Length: 49
Image (cartoon, rainbow, N blue to C red; front, side):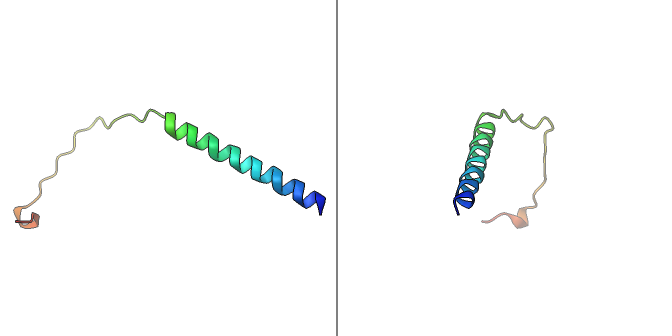
């Protein structure tokens, strides 16, 4: 039973470190803004009055 407990703690630690690393990566990632300008014509019928 001790081996199962130790393995579970190690797996939990690995997942915790991976989640923390992913959080830090996403928090510090400088996502570039889109370069292409997008224009879309919306008909007047679709707009609320």
